[in-house]
Length: 115
Image 1: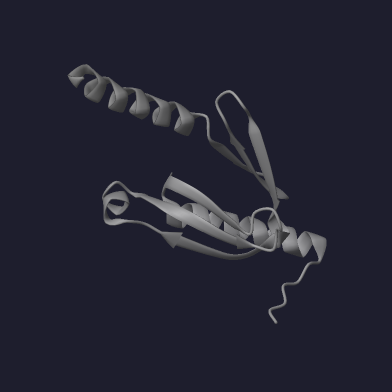
Image 2: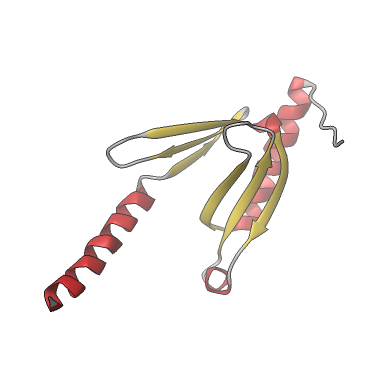
């Protein structure tokens, strides 16, 4: 019984580490592509012109290690909110995404209207 209490947390930690290492984000000039999955691969694509708002959030523990969470509010029907979790330098990442969103909107001639 004691072995079970020692082995299961190690297996769970290894699974989380593996799952995190297979989770990738790619920012292009038109899209943000999220790739995830160990055995079953999943690819989620977000058109940058659909991003309405970008915010940064971090807990005390994340702040101590220079990590945070970037939250994207979008008009996309499949993923109206996209969380980029435990990212290093969340302020810089959010600024990079914001700049790319503005470039994409200018290139496409898209304007955002709030009702």
